[in-house]
Amino acid sequence: MELLLLPFLEASVRTATPLAFAALGELVTERAGVINLGLEGAIIAGCLGALVGAGVGGPGFGFLGGAAAGTAMAALFALFVITLRTDQIIAGAAITMLGLGLTGTLYRTLYGASGASLSSPTVAPVPLPLLSEIPVVGPALFAQTAPTYALYLLLPLLAWWMHRTHAGLALRATGESADAAVAAGISTTRVRWAAILFGGAMGGLSGATLVLAQVGTFNEGMSAGRGFIAIAIVVLGRWSAWGTAAASLVFGGAFALQYLFQSAGWDVPYPLFLGFPYVLTLSLLALMRGRSAAPEGLAKS
Amino acid sequence: MDALLALWDGAFGSSYAFWSATLVRATPLLFVGLAVAVAFRANVLNIGAEGQLVVGAMLASVVALGGAGAPRLLVVPAMMVAGAAGGAVWAGIAAWLRRRFGVLEVISTILLNFVALALLSWAVRGPLQEPTGVYPQSSPFPPSSHWPFLLTGQRLHLGFALGVGLALLAWFLLARSAAGFRLRLVGAGARAARSAGGVAAERTITRVFLLSGACAGLAGASEVGGVTWALYEGLSPGYGYTAIAVALLARLDPRWVIVSAVFFGALDAGAAAMQRDAGVPSVVGQVIVATVVLLVLASGAARDRLPGGRRVPAGERG
Image 1 (cartoon, helix red, strand yellow):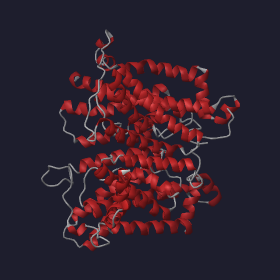
Image 2 (image 1 turned 90 degrees about the vertical axis):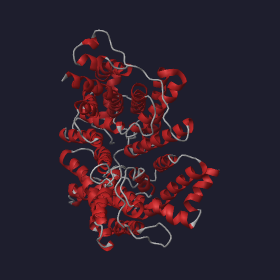
Image 3 (image 1 turned 90 degrees about the horizontal axis):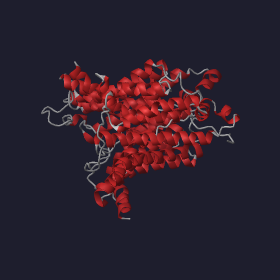
């Protein structure tokens, strides 16, 4: 049993990491009352940014490059929805399309017309002493790569920041009731810009994690809908930081299920695995009954 | 400059380029553009035209492959019905999830796109795979299922005429019929429609979902019946997403969807030629589409037609 379970748990945490980055970023954006459907575009931009950055100065630069590329996509989104006051959903969908097209174009221009795979320097798993020796959960949680550990630090920090600081209160007030926030002297424009840019940077880090800690190369469209799943994860996590992290783990598990089935030798057609996480998302969304815990002002005026 | 010339030549450079490349590529965009336009007018954010197209194509393929020996006069209309039904069912799932569980259709339709693609991937490796089992695609369709060409020597097929007819019909119904009025009323605000107009908003929204899905499903039927004559993965290079651009550029007016679909069809045909002749990657097309959407949004052209409510509020001095 342990032989089956260990690789599955390890893969779940590994797969959950990029999802959690993107979802925690989107959580902050949505808490400011903005839904960013361009997240997928930020993730794929982060993938390419990481490849370019890592090619220049190693994995460290890769993560910087990923975050910068994701932030840039988010800045474009913010320009449209905040400055130009366009529809959030459509602007987001367009940013995603732009990100997917632009990265494909740039990749082929930079690295050759065939789009042949190009390997990137990666970060290796670093088992933490003692912690990784805890039976079962130890290797799954504490024999991971640096981005996963960064999340362990970020998560409590974010939860604390959102609920225990003035800035966090300003963020939540902006999302719940912009009018009240303005009356309280909060610059909702500035809060939203910051929240969207943070979401983009996290989306970029999500893409960078995908490239630098998992795949080791760039493929066109490799974000594979993670941005949309991350948005669903925020709903499932009921707009809380801990809930979002837990929901990410559930999805990591859904994606990792194929490893479990493979190692168990059960023969299920591969394409059905491809569809499973999305079906699971839909089912869970239905069970959660929609947006009851959503910020009051989310995606509306 | 060479690239731009290649783009122009590929779209309008010859009668073949226009009738057999531009208009053939415009055909699926016409259907999906219509699907999005009708949905958006009712404030139903169907981002799932891609998945609805794929399911429509799958069901139409089942009919085409099963209809060997039957007369074309029977098989082709049956494919249309199957395609429309497939798309409607797929959109119907999102409608049900919204009505019964309050799941935002923006998210559910996108997720359903991925499920549809997985289903397609499974179908062409399983039940619908060609008999040798080597390639992930269906057998070539029997001739009885090929949609008739409209012009001799050109690849323009029945689907285009059907799409144009459907667009005009949609415009007429939207502008002149009671159902169209209800749809626009719901688009203006479901609550207002309920209290002021006595409109059953929920039912209207469900119907819009189904109609929109049926349109997108027809795109799939028209692609497999008129162009590919087989089912395979990568059938749609993202038509369902381009549809948003098509609908927005048309300002959600079905008549203008025809023009806008031809415009994007030309872009698509031109981008393919550009890749062939000038070595410019065709993903550039996606960038152009996204840029058009953003420009339309920025110009505010879509603002007066799009039911409001998802914009960041103004009126703050911060």
